[in-house]
Image 1 (cartoon, rainbow, N blue to C red):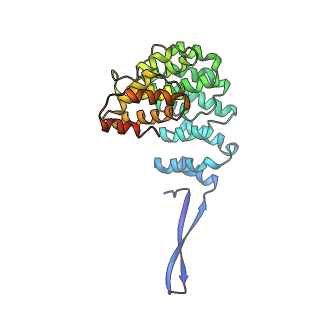
Image 2: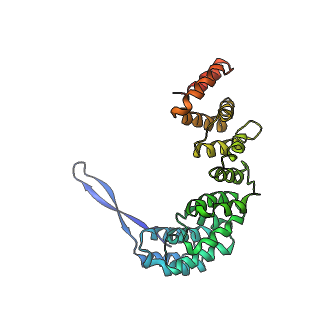
Image 3: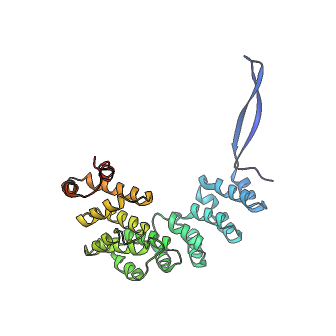
Length: 281
């Protein structure tokens, strides 16, 4: 049986004013040696996970070799991912080798976690991360497209070439990200993004496209028409983001007159106009 990282004991304390005993909690941090023992010897996954998680504030040099060995023997995906989380920014060759091995093993749950927690992709691991552009998770591909192109803008054209035929999951998230990155270099792709905000598409696609255009700070009358139409939807998961985007654009002086002029001729009942106007403040 193993305790969690912090073990609490109740010590009776005399309350002299009321002659009633109360209790204080006294906590102690487990030493690294005890955590290592718990991480390897406990039969219960949650106890092992607690021990590994409790090591996060330990110096990486003190735990690296142990964690690399533990990763090789551990079966739990949760514990493996926690080990990765603690070694992901370590430039030591042993940690680099672990990340490379984890990517190559092909478990999508681990690959997604690696991409998510990575802040800066080490140059030595760049080919390994690039290989995940052909992975089995569309969400992972979208995140990877962002991180790779931001860190290596000179290779963005290559990343776009690799992903140009991928639509993605619901909300065609890979295609939307592809258009967003492409529009940074060629403004013609903004027309396609604006098209995806229209009512011909389901709400997830529309929202993805709206947010992509917002990130690029692109605005025109067609987008405004699609946003105001989306604002009238009974689906709050569409109307809410549409209102957020309208408010964002209206706050910019260059767009304010376009919106004001549009509202002068906008045909809608009073309730709809009131709803839209609530975002124009």
